[in-house]
Image (cartoon, rainbow, N blue to C red; front, side, top):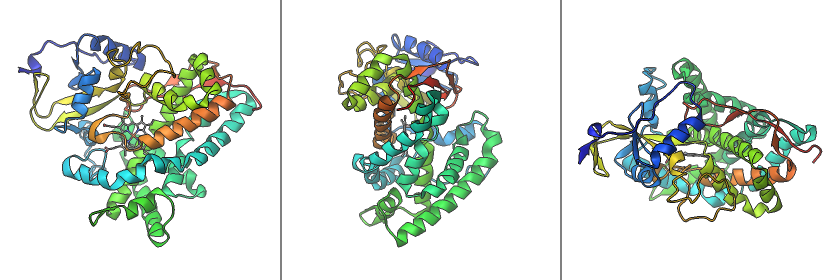
Length: 404
Ligand code: HEM
């Protein structure tokens, strides 16, 4: 067994202004020779097998709770000790997952599909009528909020309030987190108060929504506390809004560059589920996630001492030619290989909202391929900085046939 420090490893240099494409090309290049590389924060696993190996090994713990610490943030309220499903480990995590999982089943997501279609249709009306515009502003940004509100049972008149709170809570992904802390703390307070009211309402009048499902979720006499219900709503916002809107943006950019694939989808909407998987394999909005060693860990003959930070590069794993033949080819008719893409993660933190996200993207693909058959770029898209966890376009100028 060799101590990781004593290995001669390729390094992934971080360069300011590096585009995501450049960084991915670098990582994928290294992955064809090595399963492990040295990065600016620690190490990164790069191949399908090693990414799964780390994500499914419970000794590697989520680093989601460490971002504030790494950035030196000491604000007490911001760092308050509240368990979040995104960073919980061990028994605490198992219990939370067991209680909430049924509420996030494919069947629960399916009941929102007609609503999803209606939302996409309403969003596409103006841009289709005018023949084009910025798809991010018109479609991708607004899309997830009504869905999350409907999921939670928040009424339409609260969409705007919710959208503002979500935007502020999502500042946790800012590169300059320290300056955003007061805004985030205030938004969390407001969101928690709002959620408590929703919970009180649903306790009186149960409805067909997520809050009601979570309130009634029970296992062997165990139930979620009000504090945990508030945490779950925050986790749904943090996990379910920016991810979905960026993934849809990346999808539209990809299809605009591959009109043959867009046409295939338009002519055969039953390809939508496969198209979602291929888009997420080819260009996932979450390209990697970070773990830390909760103890000394030996993996693949290498010793990683306690505290080691390890990135799991899902975007490299998704291009592992041992799993996905001809990975550089974007092909929505790709036969499922039995090994799914890694863009929803793997192991105990596997995306809780995967069914919902799949349904949202499938419905959007079906409606948009019908309503914008001539999708094309009219300029160069602008992308978000690569440093933050969730990636996608911030500006996507498109043209689409008017009047549909
Ligand atoms: C295309 C959209 C989405 C992508 C790419 C995505 C990606 C991911 C990834 C990669 C993880 C694992 C993170 C890690 O291991 O560190 C994750 C976890 C999670 N996601 Fe998603 N997600 C999406 C949509 C959603 C939606 C719609 C929801 C909620 C309704 C959601 C809620 C969550 C939650 C709560 C977790 C934490 C689960 C746990 O730690 O047990 N996500 N997501």
